[in-house]
Length: 386
Image: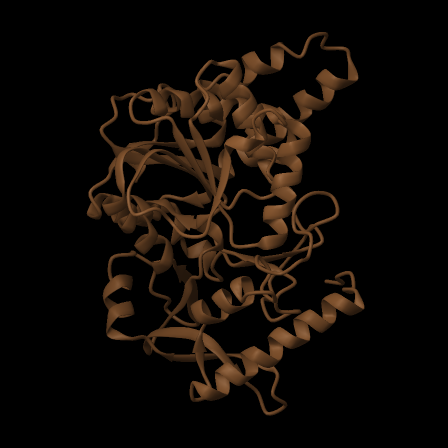
């Protein structure tokens, strides 16, 4: 696959990160786990994909997220947030707020519904994205922008609503390899020319224990490769101690475990994105590519439950958005023949049709002290599949 060439400045940033990765691999005895590599490539201050200065979202970036397709996504989500806040506290914490479009849409809609949060917090690791978020909020919701507070770490205790839209998929994953000789961990080494290269090591006892519950098919010959998101599981358990009342709303692409580890997925779900092109090479220009893996929602639910959280619902994105009123919101756009309505309808179609994002993306809500069923899961709840 032919990818567009990065600019001279971007290539220099990638080369600097590559030099740091090479030094780290050598200092670690010639091998690091892929989880370490992914964390370094995405989050190294000033150089990583999410902590550097390159544009990531929108037409000029590498991908487009749901809030950038249409404000209707945030308007529908706001209905669910309002219900949860009414049973907990009037506070919203958005983790990884992208360009700030979702924050603006949520604040504007919650204001319209008469239930503005007293505080809207954003946890964002990228200084460049913080600046873009502030600009977006000042432009689209100037009277509400002052309610937004940027934070550097998760609060020790929290009550209200946590929004995590496409967050779990970019948490560093371990790569596991099943083959006749046993279970291995696929990591990163250097070849004879000092280029990044795959290298397998026997899996640790901890990984062996974690993998035993996954139900991955044992290959008769060859190998089976997949991911284990221990960072995501730890994040879910940790919220059990932090959350006093309220819920986490997690929106991401993924499957329940029974659909995740299928024989047909023998190469795993790892993908990279660069300039709206998906490709399989995480070693290509480190720091310039997004690196993601699909979410095992069963693992996230188990971790949340182990941390003391209840799982209030799990559904595909289409069912969740329909339940939250996205079609009613679309109807308010007016004449179906007008270009603005047609554009909005096409965006809703992309968000909800099975061939697009409607089935691939899932929504799971975990929390404490809420009454059920929640609005987003009154029809189409698939909690039983977890």
